[in-house]
Amino acid sequence: MAEIITMPRLSDTMEEGTVASWLKKVGDTVSEGDILAEIETDKATMEFESFHEGTLLHIGVKEGETTKVDELLAIIGEKGEDILGLLNNSNSDAKEEEQTEENQSSNEEILTESVDIPEGVTVVTMPRLSDTMEEGTVATWLKNVGDTVEEGDILAEIETDKATMEFESFQSGTLLHVGLNEGESAKVDALLAIIGPKGTDVSSIAKNFKAIGDSTPKQEEMKEETPKTKVEDKKEAPKQEVKDSVSTSSSGRIFVSPLAKKLAEEKGINLSQVQGSGENGRIVKRDIENFTPAASTASVGKFVPSGQEDFDEVPNSNMRKAIAKNLAKSKFTAPHYYLNVEFDMDNAIAFRTQYNTLPDTKISFNDMVVKACALALKQHPQVNSQWFDDRMRMNNHVHIGVAVAVPDGLVVPVVRFANEQSLPQINAAVKDYAGRARNKKLTLEEMEGSTFTISNLGMFGIDSFTSIINQPNSAILSVGAIVQKPVVKEGQIVVGNTMKLSMACDHRTVDGATGAMFLQTLKGYIENPVTMLV
Image (tube, rainbow, N blue to C red; front, side, top):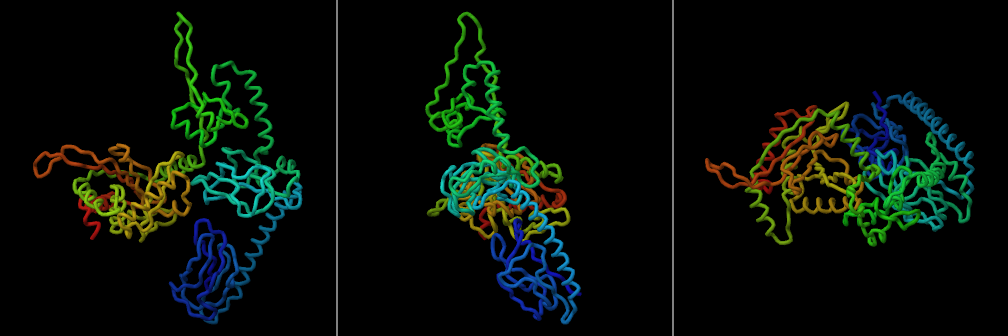
């Protein structure tokens, strides 16, 4: 019986694919596992293999042509089989989808007409820069209103739920309007900017623009109300010695540049006590550098408490919201249980000391743990598995996520094929990822695809802790500090070095005995690290 082959989804963000080349032609025999075609996705050109056997009876997309995911790509069946019925059904489905798209396009035309966008003017909306992104925050504008914008210029840096990414313009013209200030957030498809011919009046567009399906108040209306609220608040608020001079929004938010915020943290300065000299009272670098704490005063002969109740409210970043959402989902959907072990680290210490005597070589204990886990996972694929609602995936490759703390939360760059990497290669990869993670320069691809995760707080002096599983992975290993303490060896109490580890497992995929056997294998590699080199 003939089978319809549809355009596959070869990446998590893929919406359509282009046939780069066909490796089979109509009439050819196809065996299961044969490469049918090379498909160009939004990320790479990938080989697409057949999961069916038979004869290639029909090709629905020619080389160089593009179609959406799940659309007809080819038909495989028995030689000479009648496929007219399948083609008719496929065309009928395509027409229904085209009608849906036409309706959507019609809605967009109605929206455009109601806003009355002049010729040559383009409304730039908040882009969807990751598959899970629901809203974005403008971290930095790299163009100002009035600047000339060329196609390919970087307009702004947008903070998503995963990283801060550069957003380039696909239009040329003059930046006529900015819909969001630095630090402000908006949902995907909300007004971000307007580009067009110099001197064009776009005030009506900015005032009336609303994304399709958006029922929230217009941006401009919200902005116009804010200053009024500020004035009223200032009139009614009781006098205070310091805080009246601080620029805050009606919600209590302090406006501060990223550099000034960083300097304030380094110097231990409370931003609520700083007078902002930037635009609209924004706190900038010079305000922090010139800040002098106000001296406290007290009435003579009268006791006046020197303390003052004080707090700062910081809006949740997109990254922090995503962390909260994902970890809450993991904790309350995956049945966690924990296995705790303690390893003898004497041999590991001696091994690392000797290994680091090699020229231009330096490895850490964390690198050794990554390598040991990777080797152990190859022997215990159940721990290297992933849980999905309708299936369990047993991974034959080992991609280890290494948790890295960043100012806004936590990111997990992935060391790919870690079992095949040498210790120095793992060291170089982890150092590179950690440095770029703190500067928000990691790409989405570098943070996706882990099959197992390691979180190490040993460098902070934490003896032991437990972690929440990074779904869809089945387990995460928490690594504590190496501690020197009395231990018993060959019946004698001697000074030893130990390290505690705790592995959180998803009971849906990893049984207790399975997790225990993995940790036994891991113990062998950690306590006898030379075996990792064999």
